[in-house]
Figure 1 (cartoon, helix red, strand yellow):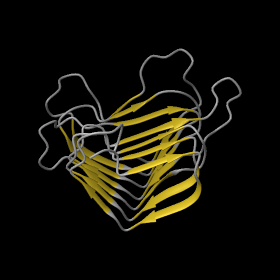
Figure 2: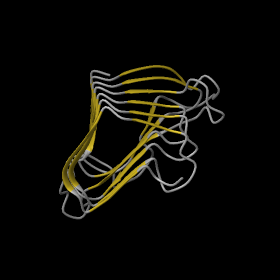
Figure 3: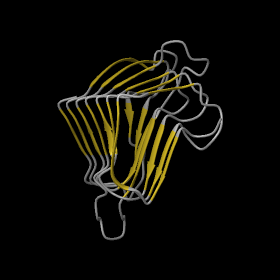
Figure 4: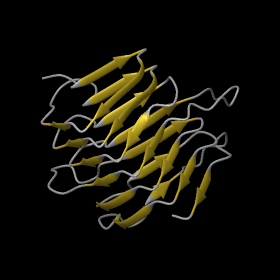
Length: 174
């Protein structure tokens, strides 16, 4: 079937304690566009051929205490206004990202736009560079990242590119 959760312009929704598995069509397992305060808490997103959680536009949406594994793209946080530097404040906190038994061992966490928060997460066992950060004023803190990039010769756990307009990002206590 298609995406399990599709949110368009939704606000103040809590999705809690569900397991999403085996999604093979749609933009993502959980697809949020221009939503406000939509949160996945204590959910498991796994073993799908589509991206796990895609949050684009809107504000204050995210995942909390979720497990994401065996996905081609685990998480995408994108939003905010790069012209005014208005933060979207999307977030991923206290969550677990890994590849256990996937055919695509790379996986990925993508953070872009302005003002995303990636805090207190466990990220491990990715054969390639797992996190790509671009944009402005993101906070990446207190995460544990290990056993990453073992199939690459020049990658790292977090890649922030060489974008001349990307500034103000804070990486601490990782």
